[in-house]
Length: 522
Image (cartoon, rainbow, N blue to C red):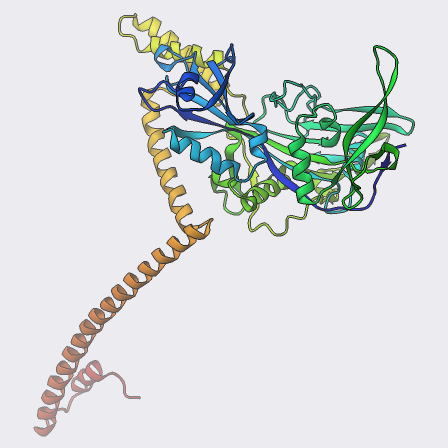
């Protein structure tokens, strides 16, 4: 019988598991497979492309894949489509993501070959662990959730028919809500929240179970060993061939408790095996917008959020605050009816310790409607072009315009006419300026903070000099006014002295005049 360890091990291994970006090739350069072969790259070219691109090939780093490029799009804007002729997608191979500084490797490649970086098209951030910070095991979380003892907040739609999307080894691994029946009940080993069209999705699954059917990803286990999450032990076990019905002895490496592995091969029953689970957040291009809970400021995630371990960890824990949030189930009874208690009145299940985060961010989808599909975008562009064709009748052009507007409304006002677009561009320009000013006043890196501090010093110096000059100028004006007032009083006193000397102050009118000059002495 295989032995599963129960000793807590709060070591975590945070990593990228998918990274693809959208770029533009240099104009006038055909950067196909032959181009990179001529530069000395080993290239594996696929005979067919994808739904969006005619070409797809992989650049190899020795005998291992380095990155994958999709290029030569079908749908061009000049023909009413959605892509520029130079459009392409670059995706780091899964193995590359587990090497040191994968984002820097991608950035260097983009700069070296002159690509124009446009943005992230998809990124997956994952954390491998054996136990959560509060002491709960991932297996218990999955089982209690499926037994309705725990509820998920913010993202509750379960997708039971999905895969991890990694086709590096051409093995589909279904990651929906599935498990197995045991004598003690159902045991769940995989859950996924978020619809297939969702900009953000969350997965919790048993990674060691997944790797049993994908032995090519040995580099992931090596990463676990280096992080201190587990050790690897070579074991022998009995295998019954389903075709021949014969039993044979086989060997394999399994994950065991750190510090329990030995050099020699042992029976699988003697290994202190351990299950490693993965929490994974997948974001596409729409999910890159985040909202700061402090001041509702919209922040656009870029490669800087994943280029080092600190940034990657902060991004993961930020996601966990919003996308991996659970509460203990609580029910209320109203007569014969049993109802769920409001989520804000239920006790929160704090799985990760995120107190170290300086600010908490919440992913924000910019529209509640679904994005337009590729077919709808092509249809939209053609209708828009028809609405601007002066050779067509006014009624025909207006009809095309109205149909385009109706399709646009179904997808969050995706397209607006030129007369409305100009006004929106002004607002976008103001928003970009506001975002720029915010970033200048809220440095995120040491270099940004240094520049910000120098800028603040310059502002302080200029402000101090201007303030001193202004103070001197105001003081001079005030002194001049005081001197003029003193001269006026002197003149009045001389006149009064002459009148007193001549004994001319005799009436009440004279007394009132003195009051007006000097005020009431009492």
